[in-house]
Length: 309
Image 1: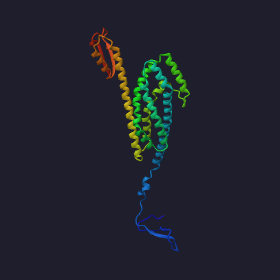
Image 2: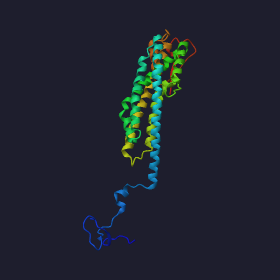
Image 3: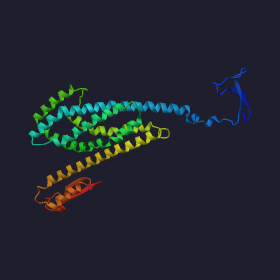
Image 4: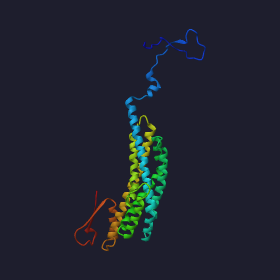
């Protein structure tokens, strides 16, 4: 084939096929006025190399797998929380009330969490087959709901402490056994115990950043700019919730340590009240090691409290 050159003439069909044609031929001769550059054509510019196209295909398949796993595990999680609320919550509150302990306020965040997660699961299932951008937008738009986990984390530590006081009671053991038998027949065939179910929300919120990170890894920043940016924003927001939970957990542990120290030493009449208060404040700065000089601690000088980094 003769290369096209400017000024060359080549045959071609008429550009107006509906007009009456000449009897001798329906072929017109065209004079090339400008040499076309096919490499600059928009369709050619948008065409990616084969290797890049194959890589995008593999990333797409992996993203689909991550989304399916997200939806599947979300269904299991909601089923577990439903079992916890419907089977364990009421007996737990009744038993605690008989011991002059009110757990209703502690379990309120759990009820709010279940309401939110049911709604989130429905929204997630509705858009799972659309695109990753929609999923990223969902996480960002529902971030206020995820902050319920912060309140639940505080309640979880308080409930866990209460359960430690109940476990030696035979009546409590029978109650847990009856509830566990009901859970084994619950839809979804949940086999987890009470403590396992209570910690499930704490474990679940830590999974969301992993899912979003995996989706982000399989999203090309150059060709999927908006999706990549939305995933990054959602990941940052969810990580912020996890950081808040971690801070509350450390704060709860510090308060428990503070109260334990005060309860251990406040009855000692030989210790000044100011020293006891100072001792509690020291405990909040880190791991506390207390040792005596081996004599009767009748003065503050004979007790040494040091913080260990």
